Length: 62
Image 1 (cartoon, rainbow, N blue to C red):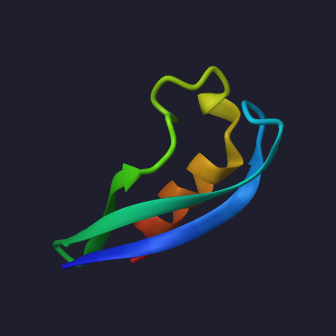
Image 2: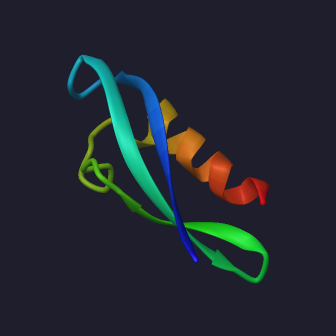
């Protein structure tokens, strides 16, 4: 089963507020992040991105 979460926060690359759609897949009772609709893999601020951290936190909760 797949679910979506919308995460809002400050994006350093865009220098403003962004809302990012994140998709998760259920596997072995856990949610695994499978998609984010931003370019986080190529982003120069990837390691400090609060949106990315929140997306992974939501995935590891269940």
